[in-house]
Image (cartoon, rainbow, N blue to C red):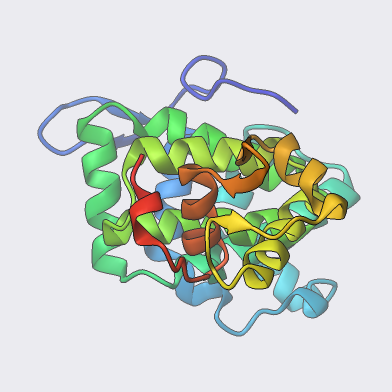
Length: 234
């Protein structure tokens, strides 16, 4: 399903503080989920999603409620996929403090970035066949809330994750661990094509190197360590 939350989805009654503008429903639901609903999924694991109780609990998470009621997600498989992705995403968001997540979203609203950011996150949650991508995106949002990466970097990285295949994403930590965290990667033709397909690696002479965005993705999306920090600059 594709949607533009600022156009096809109307608004809810909650008003932005000091601006008098109603928040678009989709963006507000993502904000409420990452700021207020983290504790709801604390004891809910992916394997338990089939339980009636847990499904009822997950159904109350604002992102899920909005997808079901506003975006008309009714297919059972699609709904369960969304719930699994939400679990992975919200669990990963716990890498940042609630206060910092709240401040982040307040800033996103003030800079008119909240709607686009929420749309991108929801695309990942609704379209990803596996929770793996949602977990990486949750870690990236946590890094943004902590101030470890900029909005522009986070937005670019989430789009890379969204478009990438899961084998390509899984190849990144393997390649970085093999190189000892250095951005000059060991020659490995089995992973080179996968990394190049994401646009996060390039050939410099005969050397395969990780791009600055690739280094950020490994560090903040996978919790890795980059040995040559100067290559983190973009």
